[in-house]
Length: 271
Length: 76
Image (cartoon, rainbow over all chains, first blue to last red; front, side):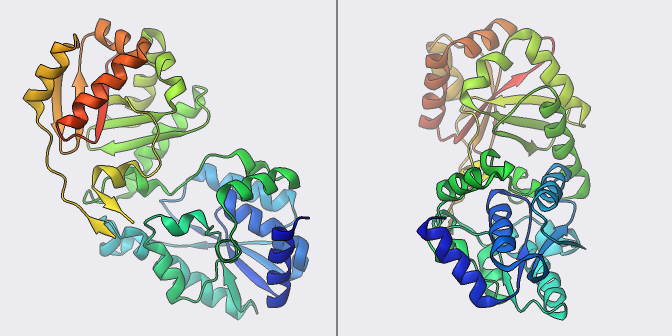
């Protein structure tokens, strides 16, 4: 265990019992595993907030990590889509989602004796535009990975060393991030995006992949290296079929390829 | 945090600029997104030529577009 991980272990042990907002992404998976090792299974609780914007594929990863590392899990249903301020999809949409998540998760954690609630925010995230961070702050949710200076690269390296399968997993933001700000978020649209991405994964696309929603048109973002392959006539037609099968009437490929926060760029949102 | 209102890019100017570069296509402007609609041969050429893709992106950026996508059609 290196110095940084030791500092995290001490931070967790000083809190005694810790509940984690757990998505099964790279950061929260690492945090949950380290917490289980630092505190033991009785003093850790990984809480998953399940909603229409949380991909089923990600849920399966979360459960797999928890099972493999003996991390106790609690699942809560959250329903950010019922909040019209969220559904209208403003640029601070994440604030309303996280408000819904933490306002359900924190009281449940406390009634079970977990007075410290943490999330997987890392040091790199602090430089991004993340309105959800305000909601975490308002609900006294701590971010030890960010506090202790863990970057995403640090977390991947340490996850790999611990054998956590998420170490190489692409970033996995919620499905609403595929819908441009100002276009309302609905269960149907989230379902379309999720189904299209799943169909494309089934074609063998690995690594970075996003299906961006533009009404009738799906804009698929792939890693630059795979663009030539998917623009060949034979591959192109199966890609189009997969996207249309999810309910889009038109399919397109982004010429620049995958960009994290692509729709922030489209709408000029900056930190 | 700031939110900048994105001006729609100039579609006819981009069509002309792309044609000059040998990329004949129709451009559909959706705010900051330019959707290129081209025939099968042009799609294939864009796929195999990274330099041409970079040129299309640069020309679109000059016209105020932040994103460029090529429409894929089973018949293209």
